[in-house]
Image 1 (tube, helix red, strand yellow):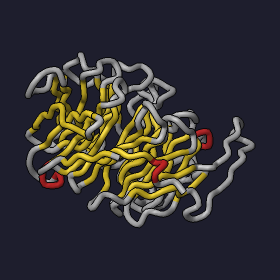
Image 2 (cartoon, helix red, strand yellow; image 1 turned 180 degrees about the vertical axis):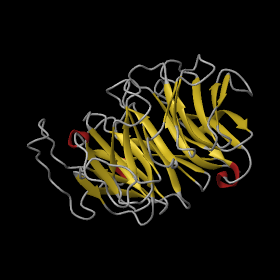
Image 3 (cartoon, one colour; image 1 turned 135 degrees about the horizontal axis):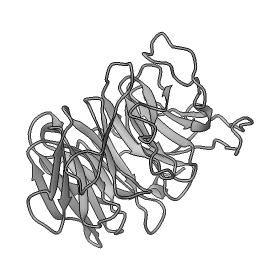
Length: 350
């Protein structure tokens, strides 16, 4: 395992480069993101440990980052002042592009893994915006219909469909969007019974499977093939939603689950980061058939999917990612304790 201290800055996100096995990006904020500057770290993995190859300071805190899928030296960041900035790590000091259309903090950024020339952002203003790095303004804005805007904590492109986006919000909805259809969602699930949903991720091997995590301490697994019909209006929900139920629920965290990430190497492995100061490795043993009308589902019991716990952090763990390269068990985590850890899940599996 390796570690790096982001001295004076509390980590919010960490991402492996899709081009280099020895490079990470870390988005961090001073004073836990409440007030003050931000810093984007470019970190290198060396035989002697993790070193800071470069960093960029920003006027407001950074909450997320994503590597470009078409340019190995470019990183886009989500900023607390509502701006999005594109940095080129071969240059110094300033971003090569900056956009500012969101009216609240930008909390997530996701690059399109299929089409590769666009990315999306989500914000506390409730909006999702689509961008191209070569355009001065956003391509499109997505927002819920006939419902008050709520904080959209995360939005992510499908790794299988260039136009399909999933988002999660403080109103407890998991929503699906397709900009070709319009600016409103094409389907939604009232997923965590009123609790805020903080994170989501698409499964890398099952095109219809998404995981969500929430302040209710749970991780839920969804099969989108069961979202094909809307259910009745729920009294606690401001809009009609699919009556789909999760195919699995994972229990074990003691506090809110801030970030989740499916493994790029195994269909059933999931990594989570939580306010309980741990990162955990889970195995989803749900059996999926090709037909949604005759599902084969194996539900896990309480804690049954937990495979391992990483407890080296001493504050909230808020970011996690998997290495695409080398041995299949390497991951990275970042927390408010100003620490980035790179570690092998096989050291904690049981």
